[in-house]
Image (cartoon, rainbow, N blue to C red):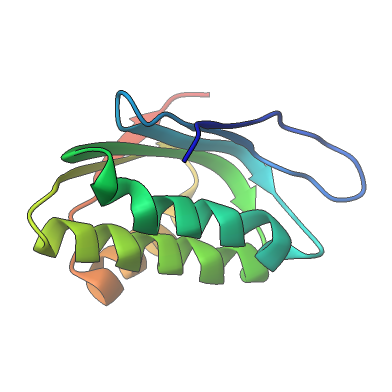
Amino acid sequence: MEDIHIQETKDIFSRPKVDFEIATGKCSISGESFLEETSKFYGPLLTWIKNYPKYGVSIDFTFSLTYFNTNTSKWILMILVELKRLENLGLSVVVNWFYHEDDLDMKDDISDYMADTGLNINLIPMKD
């Protein structure tokens, strides 16, 4: 298993920046996620998370997404469900989500994710 580093792109479809590091357990997804084929992008990320317990005992996951489409939302939920599974296995899991403080829809989405997964997510408001 290797680290994952993907640069953000903005075009007709936007791809978020991704940094997953095995040695530190620090993972982040940031930017905008408006993808046509979300499974091709998020599938390998989910597989990486599923395999992570072989390499580490804690994971520190940060989301800083300013926008994501419905298909991405489904994959985010799957990632969060997997993080909750890892937590239930005994891994230390911390999830931080940075959002613009005036983006109430994003805050509602994050609250829904917490309710759906039972995972604690630290909501961290950012000022514009």
